[in-house]
Amino acid sequence: MEPAKVERRDHAAAAAETVALVLAEDSPLPDTPEDVEQLATRLRGHISRLGVSLPIDEPVLVRARQLGSAPLPDGFMPSRVHLVRLAEATQELADAVERLTPADRHAGQPAKERRVRPSRNTVRVLVFAIALITLVIAASLPRT
Image 1 (spheres, rainbow, N blue to C red):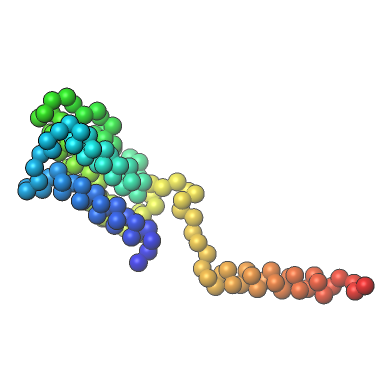
Image 2 (cartoon, one colour):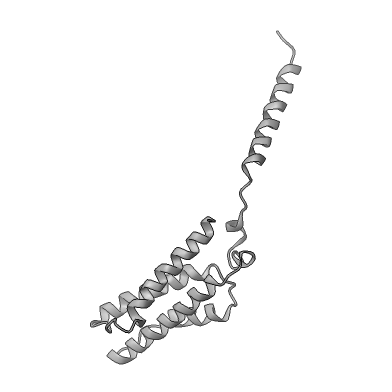
């Protein structure tokens, strides 16, 4: 399995676990404001990690980033409602990343991260060519 695909799947799986803490039917609402803040921070982190796989102008990513950048509202119910919306946006983002085709995989990443590794045979040919050139140069030098 490709490393990028495994990494995407791991981020999506981690995001799904955090989302389940908020949206699962059997999970209780967080008791304290610190719990809400911790879950919101985790969801924001998932948005950041998953977002690099998508184009910047992807509507799902734009919505998730807007919700993630908004501060948590004060009050018990408003903060929990915001947390649920943030979890839903994270779930939508994880679903969008999972649907990516291999051609779309690096669409949102900078060019330096899309570097292609040469195949093993290419490296072997290159090393052989350098060794051959070195041998020819060494053989053409005058002997003293």
